[in-house]
Length: 455
Image (cartoon, rainbow, N blue to C red):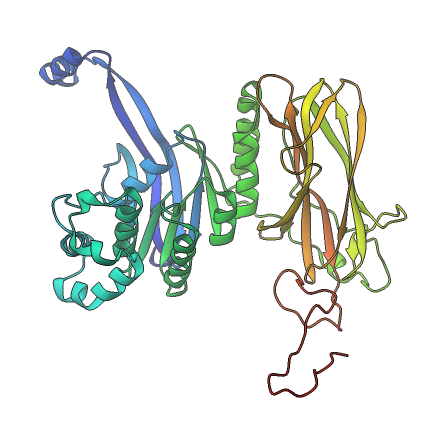
């Protein structure tokens, strides 16, 4: 357990209850009788949450709608008062909860920058020094001097975001605010958040985007029905959240109980790759028996079951230690427990962090297998060329289709297969994937001399 001085946020037994009145007159009755009688029922939006956020860490909070995520963030920011428990926040907070909540629609953008930044704790001289950076980041041009009531939703959000992330917070709180603007602006937001993280600030991040949580966060928390179910590494927590989110209604309680049981031991980490795996001679073996995923998550079946996922070479021999430039097959079997329509099979390659790199589907442009009858067994095979950078990766397997009215996941297995790509001394590329694997590079001499050949 960290010392109090190392923690930016501490919560002990935190809870928030609301009084729900069946009729408007019951509220008046309650005011008159005080605590002698209850004319309301209590709704606990959050109950008995314990939280420790170390300084400089980025913590993701995930959960289904209504799980209490926004309630928790509002209490941390001071806009809601806890009903019970203790909460200690150490440092200046900038919150991206409801973007532009402090804006006056009658003021122009420039005036609202000063108003909002002062609410967030900056002095007027500090705002004047940062105004040009804020305006440049928002990139709304001449609209900065027009009333914000004339702004589009996107412009409004861009300006609010620009103000919040330029106050140099010690704690930055983000609630589903990274979907503002176009892709270029979103990338700029992510880059700015990364700068804030690198400056040593603490970040609390709520999002339904699994990839964003895994990519941005050091640790994660899963909330459900106002309870904290699990705290641990982002990849593990997100996997459990997705399993819960996609579960059939009759399976939800069982899965909740499983996750809660896992989380009772405190912070949970994915098991590290053993030293035995790391030391396995890579050049001599195409198959490493110790290279097995320990983070596999199998979703509830909705009419089909995926099994026996593996990588093979072109002759069908199993392998999980891959060489750059070679061709491999990813295979898995599917048994249909119900007749399915409009079926598509898929795969996804992910890094250890959970970042999704590439995937594929059995049918493109919306095509699919029209019908597969109950009882059929299908072998699915994806052939791929390995141009991945050296490292360890994971493969998902799954299929979509319709057994009722809507197309949905019939079955999914996350981290079904683990594999490693060995280094190739002859390859000099950097990044995740070699985009020019077969020397598709030309040198053109602009001085008129003969072209330079690449050996």
